[in-house]
Length: 363
Image 1 (cartoon, rainbow, N blue to C red):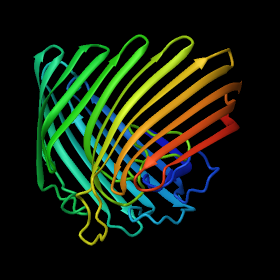
Image 2: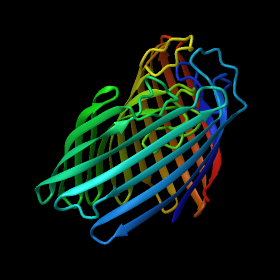
Image 3: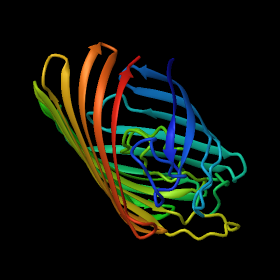
């Protein structure tokens, strides 16, 4: 039995269409403190070459504090408790015929909003086309949060077909297409690892809430209080693609990432008075780290994002340049310059220039 633990305390932007800042120097009236806890015990068991099983339970608590009084109609800040169960049983070997059965249960309870529940169960068979290629066929049942966010009855069927390839020990590719409760569905995962570089692309379609994204490692987020997620209790279908390329050299590290986050809010409850359009965010980030000396580094971060939100379209950019000096293995001094710019249909355009001198301590 293994146990994953994580706790964090920080700040979040309430509404991505409203004012944002790259630091705490400005009062934007669009922030909240958030305390979050993640506890996840899990177990794996292998039955020789016949099968392997895994079971994971996850509890997450999100507690919002010192929330600003925002005038947005599309923000609903409520604390939440999340419970999730993942279970799977499948073949232990990747060659020859393969099989897998999976089960997922997700529940998010809010202070006042209706509880969100979702279940999915199914099985998949892999038919070998060659020693490193399989044709995949999967089917099962799932609930439909678009019809009722609190009803987790698995009344909808799903199916997909696809392919899984492992051309080399350093490259994997999976693609599936089929039908789910929302219509046509797609899934893609590609990863290629070299001696110095790593390339990856992932695309998924899943129902979600803002509380479930708090510990989602796939989401691209910047440092500090400048954030892009909207905090509310809505349930949405999230179609998310992220691709990245990174490489490490003796004196420098590089990383470039692009992403597209589409959210379909057809799962609104009938008693909700405010209508929200589907939203889409396109973005890209770039990071460069140069080790100028044994204890001194230079770091540059650049981010651009285009938002298609209910309140209107917006474009924003963020730039940070840092000089870092290692004082000890766990302590560093930082000198930073930051610039944020935003052009928006919802509010007036603005620019934010700031600097930082500080210490960062790593546990």
